[in-house]
Length: 325
Ligand code: PBG
Ligand code: ZN
Image (cartoon, rainbow, N blue to C red; front, side, top):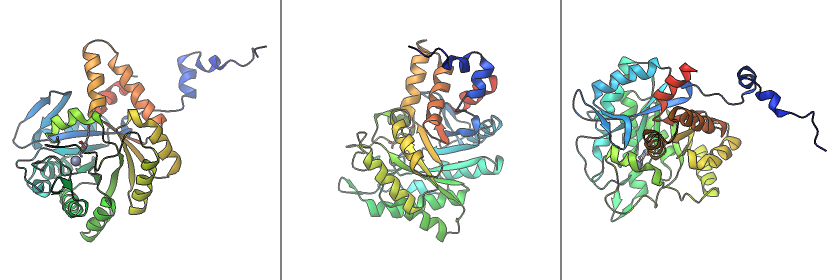
């Protein structure tokens, strides 16, 4: 016999009750908005594979940063397209490059906005790999020295958080050491701890002009099939002193997010990447899905899985939608 007294539907009977018992909440405060800065002035060009995301010159990036802050979003992550590329990616630590200038200008204009600097070399190397090459292999320990320079240059420009996305071994410890030696003891590290070699980065590589010119990134980014290996990366980053642990991509890896959340007391971030964004935008453009509903549901699932911080290209739209409700 069914027990007629047990009726979970009582807790769903109307909007007010549902809201009282809701377990997960989403807020603009959860978001980090990624921006792409480019050389020049007065540039605001839409990125074809990422509708409603733009290549921005520093002046336009500052304008957008003000808007982002007004929407209640606490943070931006800055990516850049440099003026020049070479074998070792030296424009990545050039204080006159768009990223360093943007960080400085945004910090001056909106001091309370938390600035995350993405530390990697793929946007800056002529070959598009995330480090210095030795033949066709990315040399781990030589790359660490360059990543230290990038991190310090971004901290000098005014970054609050350094986010290494290269997946070299030992880079969190190396960057921590370089930051401390240069007096940046309060600049924190949000590590791309668990970053998979993912097809979901496609639109970003168009946007950042950072696709590898030969081969792929599987010799440094993780195999999407692996879970225990993710826990190994997690242990190392904790030992090396990461302040925030990131899992990337988000949606296809929420099982990993949950595991990380259950294991550590550090803040956990997810990166809702360009391919995840582009799929939603494309289906919405075709009228096949309700964009607002899908985006809010998806971002809520990331929080439910255990993320405290969501890096997402949907941040500005989502912040507006959350104000409507
Ligand atoms: C650079 C970097 C990538 C992303 C963030 N930093 C691309 C890559 O590793 O190829 C992906 C972000 C996205 O797809 O939105 N290492
Ligand atoms: Zn890279």
